[in-house]
Amino acid sequence: MVVYLGSLSILAAWVGYLYYEDQKKSLLEKTHLEMRYKARSINAKLEYYHTNQNEQFTFYEDGYDIALYDNKINLIASTFIDDTIDFSQLFYTDDVDYYLVETLHKEYLDVKYIVIKKPIDIDKLNSVIKEMGLVALYGFVFILFVALLLSKIMLAPIKKSISSLTKFMKDATHEMNTPISTILMSYEHMDKSNLNAKQLRSLDRMDIATKTLSSLYRDLSFASFHDYIQYEDTPIDVKEVVLERVKYMDTLVQFKDLQITCNLQHKTIAMDKRKLILIIDNLLSNAIKFSKKNGHIQVNLTEEYLSVKDNGLGISKEDQKSIFERFKSSNSLQGGFGVGLDIVSQICKEYHIKIILDSEPSKGSEFKLLWSNKADKML
Image (cartoon, rainbow, N blue to C red; front, top):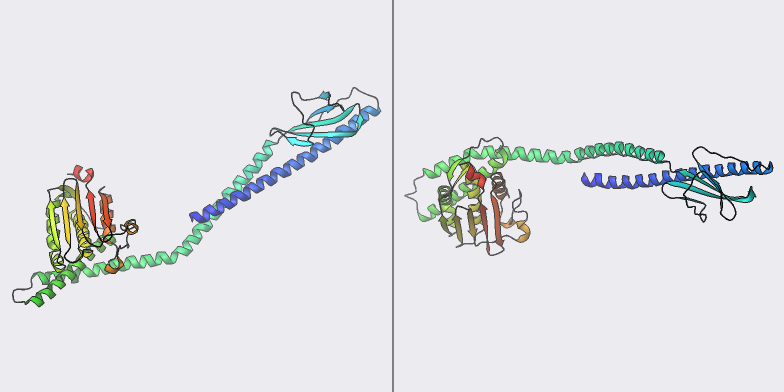
């Protein structure tokens, strides 16, 4: 719409300029003809006075100033003073007045030149500008109406698709809750003492898959229903939550033969625990997902920041520009919906937590969250 309105506005401005110049030219031509007519009228009077041998002539034209000169350009009579006349031009303007220099072929009463001066009609030019302003206003309103109408028509299918997609996400998210909870509860109560190594490994895969689904469910729930969920900020020990989530990811870490090193200090902030879990789970799951087998993950927590660092695939400079946008994923081969880091970004913006990303392809990534004063002041 901006491009549409901008291009039409430039076109309208150009057309308006041409119209104004055309009206100005027409006004100039009209004034020129009127002044030529006045010059002929004055010449006729001079002829009359000359024929009657009357040198005591008078001339007056309403709205015009008149000056008479002889063939040596000496002033004979004038109704205006202090003007330097350019006799090399027949008709010209000094942006204040119009001047007409009429040369007589036959001299009467020694008059060779008639100079007529008339002020520029500012009122007529202003009326043209006012008219253009009204046309521009009505034109802009009409163009804006057409733009909105076209936008509504063209965006209708997109809005419908987005609405259908949003409804599907909400419905799918709602339906995921019960089966995921059932699988997790069944796994927790399952007797694992009589299982062989192969069965335990299969059970671990089930645990990983279920926890991945559970994490996805929390992400989609936040994305779909966070405006309807009641959140409450309470003092939270970040260290305890980090240790809890690292333990939660233990099966997935062992499955990829990863090593997690935690260097944690106590840090208390005011935040809803569910939001903090979303942040930590997404950072940990990304580090695990993009780590190479037998890789290493370092989690640091201080009074100033929380960081999660891996030595995995890394993120290119180009992907880093959009990595926090929804539905953007840095690696299509690894899958993912591109929702997790968008959620991390949303929550961090809410609590004024600054995110610093340091990453190089094939060398790994580090996500560092710098705590803000807001979370501390709420304690």
